[in-house]
Image (cartoon, rainbow, N blue to C red; front, side, top):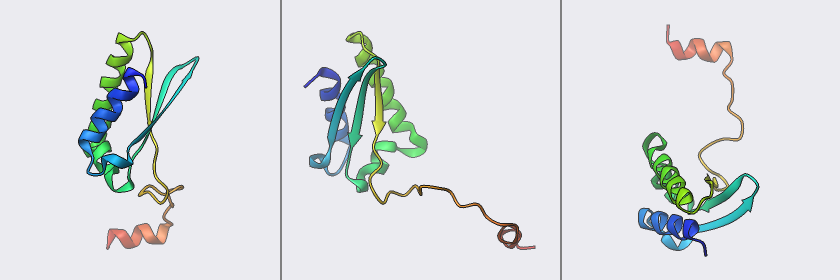
Length: 103
């Protein structure tokens, strides 16, 4: 296992309630290193953090680890099936918007 992958697993396992469900896949191509993080759906909020601040901090730390190893490291957080985010946001029609205004 490489240093960047070990580091990510260590940090994420320290943050989540279910560390046994943490899995990191590593892929190297011409763009650099891509680490894909898989966690328990119940722990997604702990990884993302408020306004995405925890995820941003993890990505920043991974860039530092990558710089030490002369590599560009990117993080992709895999969204679990049935996640909170819907595939396509639904547009409201005019009547629903007017109803929301409660005029």
